[in-house]
Amino acid sequence: MSENAFELDLPQRPRRHRRSDAMRRLVRETEVRTNDLIQPLFVIDGKGGSEEIDSMPGQQRLTIDLLADECSRLFDGGIPAVALFPKLDTSLKSALGKEALNKDTLILRAVRAVKKRCPELLVITDVALDPYTDHGHDGLLNKDGTDIENDHTVEVLMKMAVLNAQAGADFVAPSDMMDGRIGAIREALDEARLTHTSIMAYSAKFSSAYYGPFRDAVGSSKAAGTKLLNKDTYQLDPANRRMAVTETELDEAEGADVLMVKPAGPYLDIIRELRDRTELPVAAYQVSGEYAQIHAAARLGWLDLERTRDESLLSIKRAGADMILSYFAKDFVL
Ligand code: PBG
Picture 1 (tube, helix red, strand yellow):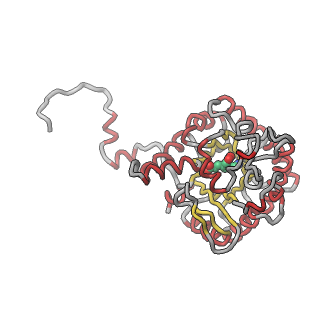
Picture 2 (spheres, rainbow, N blue to C red):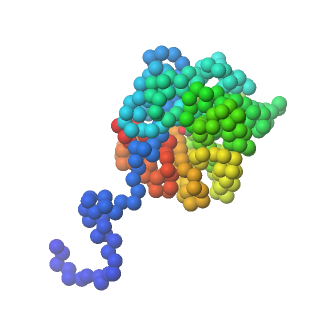
Picture 3 (cartoon, rainbow, N blue to C red):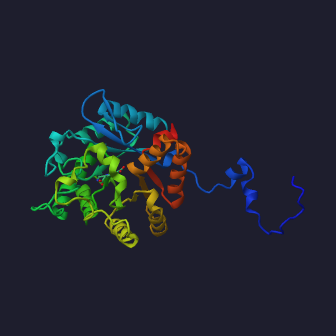
C-alpha cells in the first residue's frame, strides 16, 4: 500500500474487470474455438513420404497415405475441416493446365482417400489453375500472354469444380478471382446433381505479397516467365475496400455459401465490414506469409511464437471471422 492518500473520484474503474484471471475470463468477449479452424494441407504424389517447406516451418507436403493419417489426427483433435492443395510434378504442368481435368489427378485421389479414411471430416478444394499451369497463373493466358482469358478460364473451372465435388469435396473454393465464376460453378454443380456441395468463395482475395511461401509450397511462383508478371489483373488491389465489398456482393448474389477474405491479419477492416453487411458465414484465410513472418521472428527470438500465434488468431475472430483457415490450426489445438 502506498502512503499516498490521493484518490480520484471516478464513476467507472475499468481495471476492476482485469484484476484476476477469473475476472478476465468472465468478461472475455471473444474466443477462438477448435470448431472455427480449418487446416490447409499440401499433398504430393508417391507413398510414405513428406517434404519440408523451407519458408513454412512445421508444414510439410505429404503423400496421400500420410495425408490421410494426418487428417484423421486432426479430426480426432476436433478440427472440422481441411483445405487441400496439390503440388504437382513439374512434368505435369503446361500452359493450358490440362492436368486439372484429368479424372485421376492428384487432388482427386487425395480427396477420395481422405473421405474414405475420415468421412465426416469436411474437405475443401481450391478451384484455380495455378498448380497446373507452367506459368503459375490462376487461369488461361490470352494469345500474346498479356492477360488472363476470363470466360475461357471459368469454363475450365466449372469442370474442375464438378470433378472435385464428385470426388467427395464438401466445399469447392474458387480462388481465381475471375468474374462470374461463382454463378457458373453453382450452375455446373446443380446440373451434375451436386446440389449438396457448398461453395466457399474467395471473394475478397487481394493481390498480396503474403502468398510468397505458398507459391514455394505448390511451385507456382514462376509467373516471371510470362508478360503478365503478377496477379494484379484479377486479384484485388490492396488499396480498395469498396471494390472488395462489390466482389463479395456479387459472389453472394451468384450463390456463394461462404464468403472469404484473404489474407486475414492485414485486412481485418474488410473482415469486419463483411461481417456487418452479410448474413452468410465469413471465412478468413491467415495465409502462408502471415504464418512465415511469425515463425521467422520467433526463430530470431524477437517474438513469442505461441502468444503471437494466439493473438493473431484472436484478432481475426474479433474482427468478425466465423471460420479461419490457418496453418497454425493443428498447433493451436493439438
Ligand atoms: C491459388 C491460391 C493461393 C493461395 C491459396 N490459393 C496463391 C495465389 O493466389 O497465388 C495462397 C494461400 C497462402 O498464401 O497461404 N489460387
